[in-house]
Image (cartoon, rainbow, N blue to C red; front, side, top):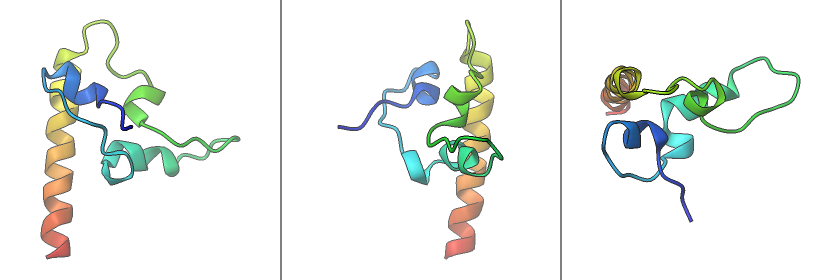
Length: 75
């Protein structure tokens, strides 16, 4: 069963986590860490903090822009 997306939840949207299709999930794959990590960069770096709504809104807008560019590139 898929888990929910914390980034979208902080924006008031209930949605499942896109995992490998999400830009923030893929970011963790490119970190030079001693132990490989598979997961969400938003969670890994604890970017949402106590009141994550303002940061979550900005991060979600970045995600949507990146995904839009990727979609145009793939067409």
